[in-house]
Length: 200
Figure 1 (cartoon, rainbow, N blue to C red):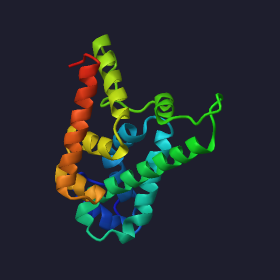
Figure 2: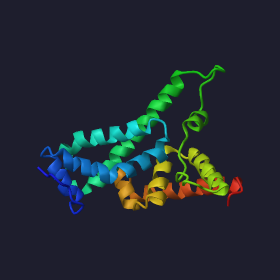
Figure 3: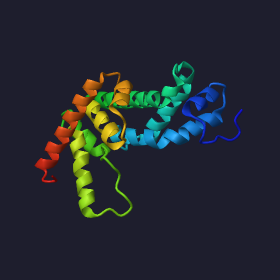
């Protein structure tokens, strides 16, 4: 058993130790990726139930470790689980939306639901942001709402988290060309929205 985890351990080495039942190795993987997973889920799903979604990702990760074939692809596999949790969450919200009526007797639309749940901006405000920065972040947050979850994921992972298009393609199970086209479309839509709002 590993009593002290050192940063020199690769993800693959930690996975192998995890498979032997060492929870301290998994805690190190959690420490390395928790913030990135949380950021991705925040961008894709908003603030509502965020901590629960993060816990769900790592619970699925722990349970699925014995089935991971290529331990060197741990981070890609983890992001795929993150994507699955995000899509499950969106499906659940959509189902709830159609199962209940608003007080006016009509279905609550996507825009209304997302507006109240706080769909994420490209970055959280800093401790003391100026008003222009807050205004721009709010516009970007609204701009992200016009994108599908699929387009939003590509834009967030590539432009915010600097993830290579090839890795995004592996996460989503898509050809790289499809990722490129989705990224192009998402950027175009966001830019068009910001231009309409006079932000560009």
